[in-house]
Length: 391
Length: 238
Ligand SMILES: Nc1ncnc2c1ncn2[C@@H]1O[C@H](COP(=O)(O)OP(=O)(O)OP(=O)(O)O)[C@@H](O)[C@H]1O
Ligand SMILES: [Mg+2]
Image 1 (tube, chains in turn orange, green):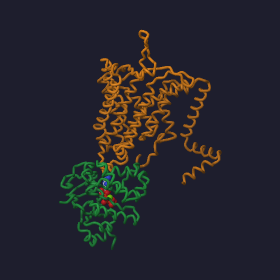
Image 2 (tube, protein in one colour; image 1 turned 60 degrees about the vertical axis):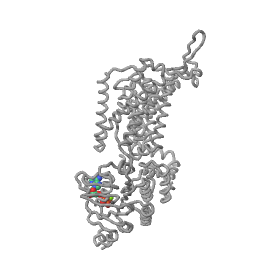
Image 3 (spheres, chains in turn blue, brown; image 1 turned 135 degrees about the vertical axis):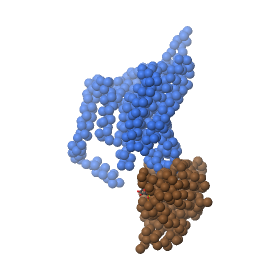
Image 4 (cartoon, rainbow over the protein chains, first blue to last red; image 1 turned 90 degrees about the vertical axis):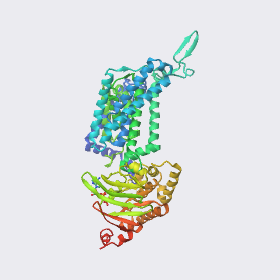
C-alpha cells in the first residue's frame, strides 16, 4: 500500500523536478554518469548509422538469427555456472572445459560413424548417439571434478575452491592437448533432410523424374523472401534456438516442480536444515553438477555442428562469455542465465556493424556490456539484491 | 529398552568442548525435556543426535541401532525429526513445499497427503497460506510451519528446539497444547528443549538439567519443579 502511494506520488511529480532528482543522483555517483554518457553515445552512433543507411533491416535479421543461435549456446552454458553458483556460491571456472570435453569426445563418436558411413545412412540415430556420448562425457568430467576437487573444499574459505576451479580448467585443457594434440579437428558435415514432400529442395532430375531430398536441417542454407527482403535462411539456427528453449523449459520444470528440484532449492538455501529433512545434500549437489554438465554437453554438440571444428581450447571463450552472460542475467538466477545468454549473443552479433566497429572488437562489446549492465543493475538483469545472509 | 539412548557423548567446535560426556535416554511415548541456560549445550545435543555436529566420542542408539556415525539424512530416515532452533524455514519455498520437504525421506504418497491434511487441520493458518513463500510468514506462523514440517516426516522421535521462542504468551500456550496433543493422540515421542522451563516441566514426564556441557541433574518433571536449585536458576524464583 505504502509503496503504491509513493509510486503514485512519484508519477505525479512534475517533470522538471524529476529531472532535477535524476541530475542529483548522477552527481552523487559519477560512475552512473559515465554509464549514461556511454549509452547515449552508443544510441547516437547506432541511430546515425541507421539514418545514413549503413545498417538496414536485412542485415539486422541476418545477424539476429546468428545472435539467437550463439546466444542459445551461451545461455545453455551459463545455466551450468548459475546452477552451481546457486547451490555452492562458487564459480565453477572449469565449466568451459566441461563443455569442451563433451564436445571433443562426442567428436570421436561422430567421426567414427562418419567414416563407416553410418552417419549418412542413419543420420538421426547417429546424432542421438553423438548427443548421448557428449552429454555423458561432460557429466562424467563434472562429477569427477566435484568429487575430487570441490567436495573436499566444501568448508574451506570461498577463494580456495575458486582457485581450484581455475586450476582444474587449465588441467583439463592441457590434458586434452596432451592426449589429442592442440590442432583443430574438422567436424563432419552433417546433412539431415526432412519432409521431402513438403519442401521441394535439393532436387535432382533423374530420367525426367524429379526427386527431392527435402530441407537440410543441419547444413542447409536457403534464400527466403521475408517482409520484402531476401535472406539466406539457415534452418539450423532455428533448430539450435528451439532446442535450447526446450532444454531450458525442462530444466525449469525440474527445478520448480519435481521433488529433486525442490530439494535443490532447499539445499541452496540452507544445507544443514535440508539434511534435517532427510535430503542427502551431497547427492543433490552432484545432481546440480549433472544438470549443468548435461546442458553444456548438448550445447557443445549444437555448437560444433555449425562451427564445424573442435579443439581443446574451444571451451575457453564460450565459457568466459557464458559466465559473463550468467553475471549479466544475475548469477544464481535460472531465467537470468537464459536472458543474459540471449542478450549477449544478440548484442555481440548485431553491435559491430550497427555501431560500425570492427568485428574483432566483439569481446570488447561483450565485456563492455557487462560493465554497463552492472553499473545500473549491480546484481544483474534479473538478479535479486544480495542479502547479508547470501552474500 | 529406551527408544533413544545417548551414552557419554563429547562434541567439539574446533577447540571448544561443547558437550562433555552427556548421557540421556527417552522412552517410547514420553515427553522428556532438556533445560539449561544460554550456551549450556542444548542445541548442540540435538544436533549431535541428528549427526549435524557429530560426536567425537560416545554412542547414540535409536531403537537398538547405533546411529552415532551415520550422516544426518540417514538418521532422519531412521525416524528422527527435528524442529531446529530459530525455525529455519525455507524462505524461498512455499508453505506447501516446506511441508513436502519434511516428508522428503518418505515414499508413501497417499499417507503423505493425509498427514499434510492433518497438519493443515492442526494449523489452519498454514492452510490459508499454503502457496505463500515461507519467508513471508510471521514468526509464530513460521514456528507452526517448523513443527508441521517435522511432523511430516512421521518421526518416531521429534526433537523440538525452543518451540516457544519469540512467541506471544497466547501462542506459546497453543504450541504447548499442540505438543501435548501430538504426544497423547499421535503417540509421538518428544525430546523438548526449552528456556521456558515452567511450561516444559508442566507437560514433560522427566527432565534433564544441562550446564556448560554437563548433565547436572535429572529427575521426574514433578521433582524438578520442586527442586530448590531448578526453581532459582530456571523458574525465575527467589
Ligand atoms: N558453530 C559454533 N562454533 C563454535 N562454537 C559454538 C558453535 N555453536 C555453539 N557453540 C558453542 O557451544 C556451546 C553450546 O552452544 P549451544 O548452542 O548448544 O547452547 P544452547 O544450550 O542451545 O544455548 P541457547 O539457549 O542460547 O540456545 C556454547 O558455548 C557455544 O558458544
Ligand atoms: Mg540453543
